[in-house]
Length: 272
DNA sequence: CCTTGAACCTGCGGGC
DNA sequence: TGCCCGCAGGTTCAAG
Image (cartoon, rainbow, N blue to C red; front, side):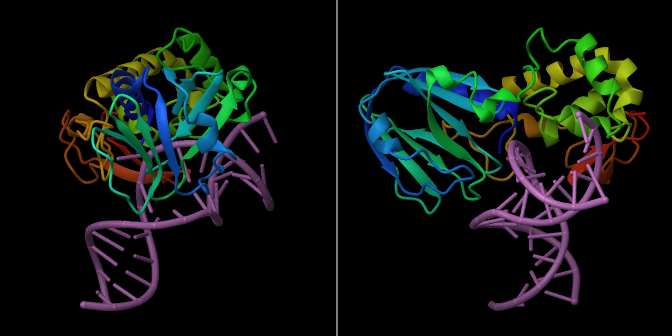
């Protein structure tokens, strides 16, 4: 489900509902996620308090008392739900927690591309899952000058390059297409040829992600927020999923092709 | 180093 | 109805 806006939406909702709560009870139903769940996970987190919930890239970081951090990634189909009643056992519900504030959390992930590992807070800076990550797109560090330089050495399509998490984090397949439409850049353009348009692209990426966060992310197939609500940004897609439909800006037909194995949508009139 | 394609896994929709 | 194929918001690994 998740690119940066969806993960940020989950983070906000978890912050409102479970921050400060103590973990009373943990059920780990299966551990064979993309990365195996840390041995002894259930025993290690039981009795601890959730002190802080952060997001880094598409990862959620749940800080717990005692100096540990639960790192969660939702992969393609992962979901975290919060409820006030004990959740029914679901086929792909891999972990449940009961909290002392009468809330329950479930980690659900049919495809199991997600992960859930427990590390020491002191390992955050050196943990292999996090070390290769580029700057956050909404932080100052992701500047026009930075992006221009990064694009200038790459020949892959600009869309593929901005999805590279070591260059900038959080931009996935939907928002890459949407941001490039907003920037007026053809996603197939070799990155170095788009380098001069880095200032516009930085703005477009930020604007797209911020708008999506404001809408609670996008709900395509199965993404629901932890609250059970859906996101609304899918209603604002300009190109994603709109193959053969008319461009809202110029009435041309939206085109579709595969770049590095990912579906890509664009308007050849508005994007060059 | 960079790029692409395949692999990981499950479910769903379309075509026959 | 049932089967097979392709495709899905991500990441990682191998090979060229």
